[in-house]
Length: 317
Image 1 (cartoon, rainbow, N blue to C red):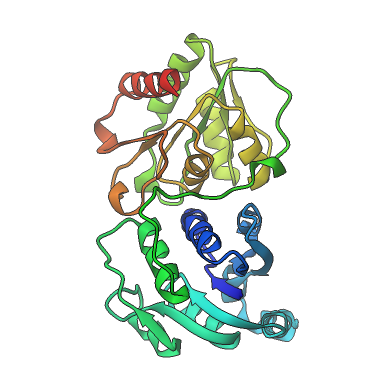
Image 2: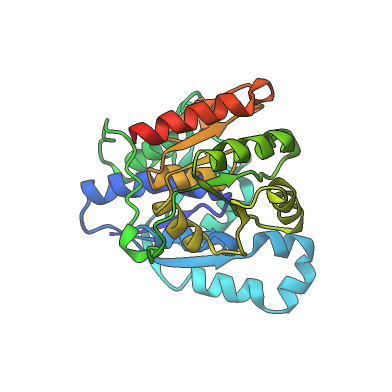
């Protein structure tokens, strides 16, 4: 059975989809997936052994200059690739008008959320099969339920299994004791106070840990440099691919993250992680793994509180 997934972004949403693939593979052993995904996140689906092909798309760039994308041939080339194979099922796991249009252009029986379950109800016009999935559940549970309904198997009651093949990541040779700080996120209101990151790094390094800070753009790089500038054991990482960050995490003692996609990567790899939430509801979209702890109302959290929590989690991992 060949199935096409349409789930282009964001990073956390893509990670949230992986357990549904694991469920489906266990229920239907001969199932294989192709996946339409934003080019920047193309690495993530490839971590799951049930994914045979990815179809990278650059919607974010196309929207900035649609005319150029059309006349350069990039959009027609993508559509040609999308239509090369006929699928047994197409699942729009995103639930937006843009993702439903992509699903419509592909060849196969289309499925998605029904009008009461979806983010943009107009998208349902392009689906043959529409399924009710309660909104007051974690995103991972919703996607697992959608896949089970669309592919006609009973959803397991077990905890989410991301199914990531960790053997594909090169393990670092370092035996350092280190923690990774995911300090950056897409929205300013989700950011923890910079001074608290500085203090948290001081707690960590005073207790014998090296602190590594990744970054994704110039603003995040500048913040990382400020956090580490007076701490010789807190280090700004070079620019890394998502797979390189995953490899780094596999050897980490733990991680601290705000509401960001890389926090979900750490959770998917079952790394001890403390996730700090302000405006987001972790019950609907938080990190999900056995080794994670959510700390909410992060504006009121002191660095000492977070340090004691991550230290206990590391000690008991």
